[in-house]
Length: 252
Image 1 (cartoon, rainbow, N blue to C red):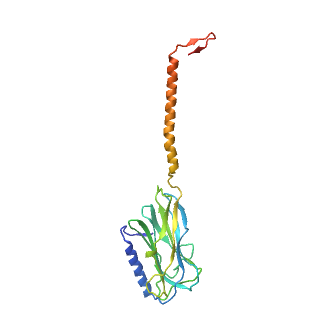
Image 2 (cartoon, one colour; image 1 turned 120 degrees about the vertical axis):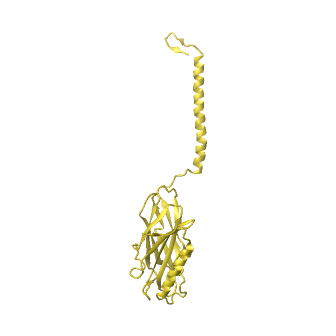
Image 3 (cartoon, rainbow, N blue to C red; image 1 turned 60 degrees about the vertical axis):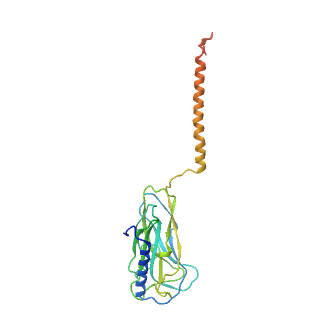
């Protein structure tokens, strides 16, 4: 279960937590090394959800793509993901049971997660680091690892058609045990995702609204003309006494 922090917790607090984790990584033995083309992505990139649903999930995945620049020995990840705060999304849980092998399986202290809000966004933070001095996860070109499987619920009655699910690069970190700058994060590319509503609110197109605006007065006018025509016909017929033809038929 994800620990819920105070809604007013500011993002700088997460940055401080990341720096604290970085300092711990330095203590367990970081040396010098290289950098590579790393990607953190949310998968699937587009996920359909239903209002009032629970148990929805996505994976956060780390991959080494592009040119092979040599291995990267990772000792820490700290990733913040977010959605609009008023979207009706509640992050409920997270686990290491990802489709790809978990990055720090058998090495890390265990996946840690929490959620917090600011005025515009609702966040979920995932982080883990290796504990044994001198240990790390060596990632080479072509590798894929899971960082977390995040579960969430959707409030009943949400009307949006789609909302973004994003990675906040400025407060997320990957640390390489051989990085030249101790405690500084490795560069990475973020691939965001989108949540789509399976039952969005139906809003008429502007052209439809115009047609409705013209059609309603026309229908009302037609009904009025029909009533007036019927009333006039009744008055004209009542002015004359019916007469009987030789065949016995009454006419006006």
